[in-house]
Amino acid sequence: MNTLFSRVATQIRQGAVILSERGFKGFLQNGLYFLGSHLLDYQTFYVYRLKLGENNNRQCPPAFIEHKLVDKTSDYSDLVSKGYDFSTFVVKNDNRLLQGAMCLCYFQNKTISHIIWIALDQQAKESLIDLPCQVDFESGEAYLGRMARNPKLPRMTFSAIAIYFQALEVLFTSGKKSCTFIVRQNNLLPQIGLAKRADIRPRSSARYFRLLWRQWWWEKPIGHLSKVFQRDTGEKH
Image (cartoon, rainbow, N blue to C red; front, side):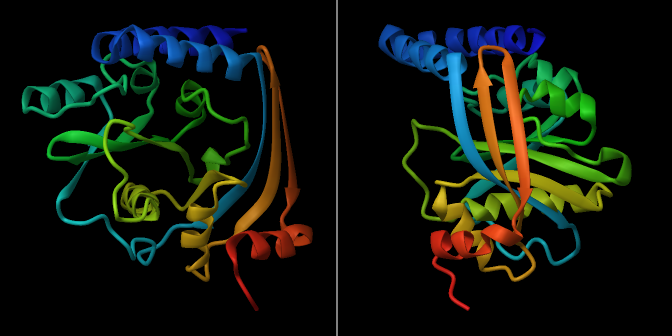
């Protein structure tokens, strides 16, 4: 129940921003989507768990894309004072920051283009109100939340995988040993990009089901689904 209330509170804050920037139509569309997706939700995912090292960052966004790490509300205020536009993404006084999470933000001409949330402990992960997969924080593992793109901006020519790799580099330099992140099974582009790295493969397949505030999560090792993964990504061996 508390999770549902947290979702509603976050959505209200974001709704206020959407109402002021996109008008009533945008606010209504966002509200209807929220209600529909939180009454009933079923999705399937691939769960990636990988060790971090100096070779994780082999692909970076182009130079005209700036990235900023925000791990406290003062970071947000400082960026806004310098003219950075966070658009419809709610970051100021965000409960996720207050609970220890941080976000990696990407800007094009000082307008945010992508954002990905990062959790270094269980409290921070719970504040993301994300999928209930298990993360071994005590052993130095970190969690990358799902990435979001600013719908106001056109899609970039660079691969979103570059953002994942740069986030992995941030985690490695902060002392983390491994990382868990999740990709929807029907989201093929990230899978294809990740498959180009021989050391990055999904470790398990997961199903997620939510009815109101109740949620269920099932994971199975990926070994018996390797042929499915190869077909989805176009890999051939």
